[in-house]
Image 1 (tube, rainbow, N blue to C red):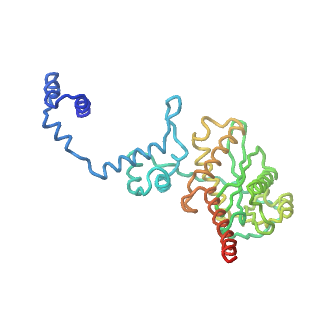
Image 2 (tube, one colour):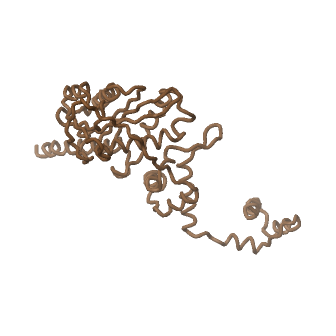
Image 3 (cartoon, rainbow, N blue to C red):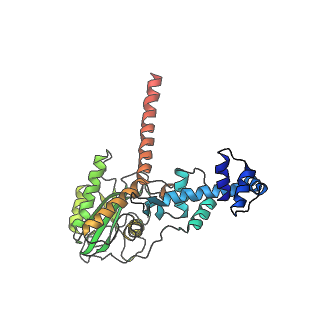
Length: 330
């Protein structure tokens, strides 16, 4: 602080010796040579770079509201790997993993960790069981080839709210979601209609016989109503085995992220969940962040919508090449 004070006076034309003499008269003992020695010191390059990374992580993790309070951003949910990827894509290209580790240790920030979930799959005794067409192979070469779906539940003051997600395996994008206070078959048929409508609206409709709809063996997913709907849309039904912890692992993973990043934090909704409307409000914010900004390691630390956009851009480029070649020949 003394060095900064002397610096400020020097900018006004005062000599170092004169400033130090006045400071000694006021009881602050500092010599001119001591000041010059401090000025000559230079911090190590790593110290400077680490300080920049700390500032960058702090700006990513927290934001200051209009009322002056500091709150955590959704990016504050990221651990060290995703935090490094986020900084590399935005404010600090090429930042090293070690610098991010040290910065997060300095800030005592570790992101969030998942908790164990509870069992929600109740097999149907008389439902129609389709075969498992996925067999734990959660990969796809294009969008609209494999969708996985599952639902979870949220406790509110008014009772349980059940939330279902449909995820495209190719991009890990949540194509549709739906919240309901009951576990009727509409819980799983409504988001299916929403997903099909969303793809049509984007100009990439689902093509008949190309899509697999994979779920667990819950009674809602083996119901006659959903089976008829899938047949009507020419979508192949796929149901995992009962008691298999990995038969629908991708959908269950999304549920786990949802409970950890949305429900158990105050980022997307502050205060308790009183009604289903509170759950829907928080879920809408989380799904938007999940699809648009959240980085996913399975697709190269990229948001799902960006990943799909690049895919369709590459396809359009490939389609234009034969046309350009033909025009050049002509």
